[in-house]
Length: 330
Ligand code: UT7
Image (cartoon, helix red, strand yellow):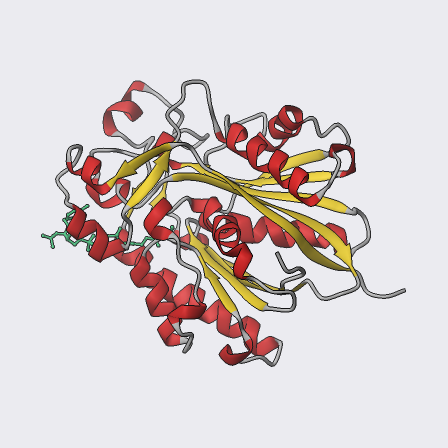
């Protein structure tokens, strides 16, 4: 029996229509376009404003279009994983809601929470089901509606995040697909980037509303340093383990949190920026959405056989790098 590899068969994004520009943020907090652009690389981000809409709506849109694009019937999908920190509810999970909205009657689903590394962790998890031969078609979604948990009076945090979603279809193949993943965690970093309240540790109360602990808190500089180190070392480890160098890699797909983090990682590993996917200027940091949104934006430039490294760092701390070979020409 030949070894089964998991390949990405297609990628699709879904974004809210509303564009929140740096100029509009200037009217909300004490900031300016020049600071945001030079310190983060972000010019605008998308915000889900429609009442009654949530993460599952973006996920459902992305999944429906993904299935159409790849010629996949709804009945064929056997599992759907949603990576998110801003699912529709604490429970039930957003994956099940998405399956229902799309009509994936043969699929089971579950949510996976690993903050900005969520898509990477979910991709690796989905691939295991394919590689083991257990399942044939798996959809992996990264989606976050960060605007639902942001404090729009905290200028250091609210300016970097946005809302967005991306989804990929995984299938089995005898050709190369996902090759290897280095996934890491360090829970001692939990206080530097977190949403403290809203779970069992600190349920929502009037006190929580007053002290604003139901919003995202980030100690930016500390997270910045750990992000550069975490993504650089994870990429190096996955390259070394597979006897590859930067020259063998066609594309690096980094988590989009700050252009200066991306540039530091690229320069430490000698990747020219031409090989690095960047779309942060349009969407900001969409947490679990950044990696599939990058693949979607760059899909037409990818060629079958391209070696690609995805990398992410986020709350937890969680981080990692995944090496794969692209499976198709667009
Ligand atoms: O996605 C998950 C992981 N997250 C990340 O990887 C994000 C990592 N961190 C960052 O990207 C950056 O730390 C931020 C973009 C969040 C902040 O940038 P920074 O260069 O680290 O700024 P800082 O927090 O060190 O603040 C520098 C100065 C401060 O003023 P003083 O104390 O030097 O007078 C801030 O008050 O910039 C000020 N500042 C701002 N000024 C204008 C902070 N935010 C703003 C703002 N507009 N929006």
